[in-house]
Image (cartoon, rainbow, N blue to C red; front, side, top):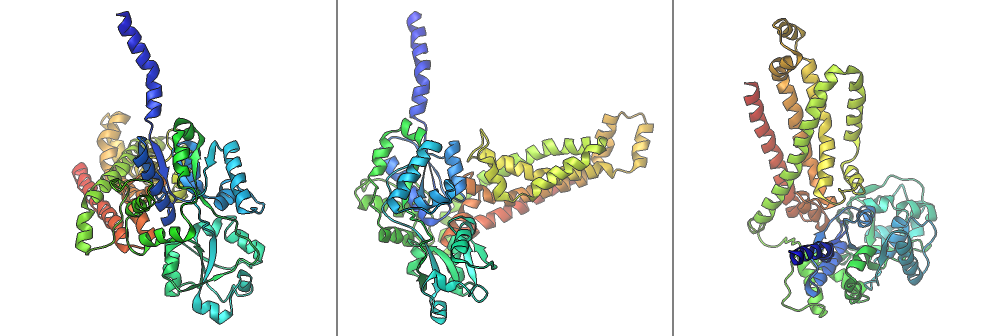
Length: 514
């Protein structure tokens, strides 16, 4: 008996160590092609060469969203750039030095202040370029960025959304070169090439390793004031993750300086212009470089754009069904929570008129917060992070206003004579609510629930930006690759889901008020 007890005690003592060893590593990426290719390379290398479980969180939002998730512990590894880490993550205002010193200072500050480290660079420098339509450059004699000064009103600027707001983007460029304030168009990075190709804009920001640069006829202006810092791509890893899996540092070091600029651009081109899957491109790179064996199978995300439309639809049926299930779970949990909280709250406010203005005001303010911003706010909150829980909480908050307002309005609009008659019959306040007010207010309450459900299904497509799944995944990938098929693969099911949910709730409403 004592031996059995000692065995159980030893098992309990070793259980945390065992659990720690088996904890998955979360490999993430930002929401553009190159970041996803690099993260897929990292994920497949770890899967092929170790027994560490890997979870992918591809296509997350901007730099701060991914890094916040890394600090919070929802992400273990993601590819970052020295210049981006300098200006955006570390918020350094001073000019970045030469590439080596920038890398070393970024690495040191991450280790000292953020419990993370930047491993050796991949080998390419993906700096920003200011790209101009070739005919525009010829017309105005543009060679340097300085040549744009004074032409702000004649040229149409189209910046990617992140470049538009980063210190190492348009705000800093405008300050250093002396551009005057001018209206610019913000757009998703992948769509900027289409815009400049169609002539909607004249100037865009580009990444020097973008695959699309091989397709479009653009002129690149020299950064004659050396504004842009070096942007060496490199893995950023949580220090805790390296403590748990020290073998990762040596493994990822094998990628150091193995991806020159031209090779990175080719990898991007294969995904963006040849329609190859991220996982296939990553696997081919790893097998060609002898990092993994030929027999290794890719397990990452796929994004095919080839074949007929029918073949595309048929090949995506299992994926779409999975995403629809995730979408239903997200919105279903959020709306049910909204009903459980907002309907009683709306009823209570009819008894506490003094609080109604404050509660409605708070719910209204929440409704005005941009969806992606609200999702991002969830990441640093303990027990949430990059997860389905964060998306559910955000969707729940969005559902409050229509439900609580309609519950309040529905109860308040019940005819006073009807209430008086019920009281005359001796009904208690609870009986009056149950048998008179709620039945009469049900159409209004259900209208609020239907509105909240449709809103939640639409907003839930943004949950993919924080790795919560759902039908937003193909939409985000489609935007990156400029693939209408992939965009429609997420947008059409989401729209149909909203219509179906509204119709089903309409059926429920008819039965409740019958």
